[in-house]
Structures are given as structure tokens and as C-alpha cells.
Image (cartoon, rainbow, N blue to C red; front, side, top):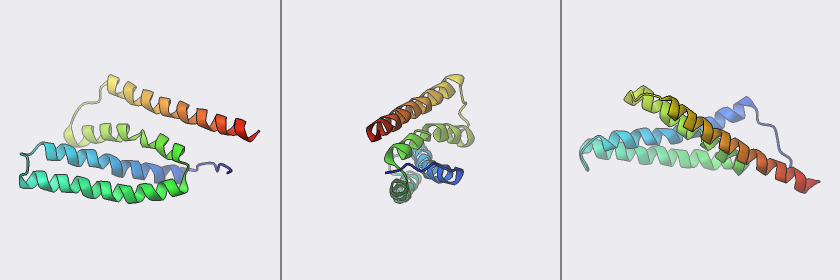
Length: 125
């Protein structure tokens, strides 16, 4: 199987799936701010399920189009998007430690993913 080079459109498609997934954390956070089984709680909890259902459909299309290792490497950016939503919607600060944590996770996934591609190349030779 020959690897195709990812273009900007491909990366944007993957990131759109990740953004949809990260929005489920927003709905969960909003639900947690209301009394258990109140109307607002049920509304936000239901919204979380709708978001996750939409994400499941989008994710199925992504893993048909991309190698699973590439798709999962991009999924790690959920941490970054959750941090962004936390800042924009809930007005929680972004600390240097949070930024360093997100950067370390993303670098770790990139290193792990690059190791897989090197092993695949060695097997081909």
C-alpha cells in the first residue's frame, strides 16, 4: 500500500472531525453545571450524545480515507481544541503548563507515528 502525501484539505478534514469531537466536552461541561436530571442537564447531556453520534459518522469516513495511525495522531489535538473551548466559552485561563502539556502530547504522538512509518518502510525493503 503506497502512502499518499497529506494535503491541507486532508488535514482540515481530519481537524474538523476532531473539532466536532472536542465539542462533546463542552456539552458535558455545560451539563455538569446543572442539577442532575434537571431539564438543562438533560438538554446538554442529550446534546453531548448527538455530537458524539455525528462524530462517530464523521470518524468512520475519516478512517476509510486515511491510515488509522494518521487519523489517531490528529485526534490527539482534541486536547488543544478542548483547551481553546475552555478559554473561549468558560473563560478559564490557559497556563504555560497547559500549553507545554498539549505540546508534549502532540510531539509524542508525532514521534510514535513517525516510528511506525519508518518500520513500514524497512519492511518494504
